[in-house]
Length: 277
Image (cartoon, rainbow, N blue to C red):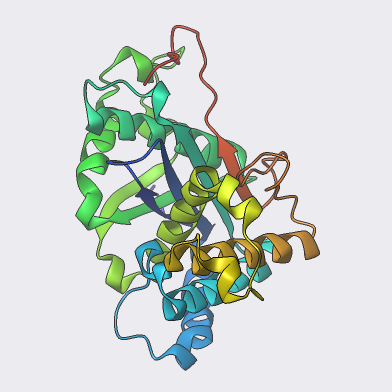
């Protein structure tokens, strides 16, 4: 009997090469909902007359931050109705070894897949997974691990092949320009790292209705990103989505069942989940 995919996931990572934090965002939904959700999101973005893709790097300027806010508003609205979910894992790089960057990122992806594919969607499902083709080198190594169960870190108690355990039909690279939800994953991954890296500055930021004297100590790009983070946080609060910012000094969702889930990697110390990647 041929297997047919029922759900789709789109993921992208942020700050794998620089900074103290790295993250991976993953947008998931029923495959039957994908076409309609893409159509609705593109309609929401029509007033901006997009000529190219929109990613976290574009939020340094006012126009890009406005587009990102429209995207975040859409995701919050749809997540509230459980039409999709987005899970973002945030990792302190002190838990990452310097031995093999590809393997580090692949193991973070593994943690994300295990959390999302096994725990966050009820019922039986078969997955199509997509990643930005420009970063697919991480996925090639992950794909190898999933298909060959090649290291002890990825072993399961009964030796089951992990790709089968996660019910993954295919893992494929895609151009982010042609996939709006890869761009969404990038924005959420970038915002997660930004919230951790600059929370102290965000807390002292005077807000969007600032004067020139208030802002002289801040880089212009941070104003746009601080305002985006502020609006996103308020929107989540208004929708009772359980996303924290102030109490955790960075984006975090205490209840991982919530459809917008930011979670901080916590090092484990058993034989199958080493304290260091």
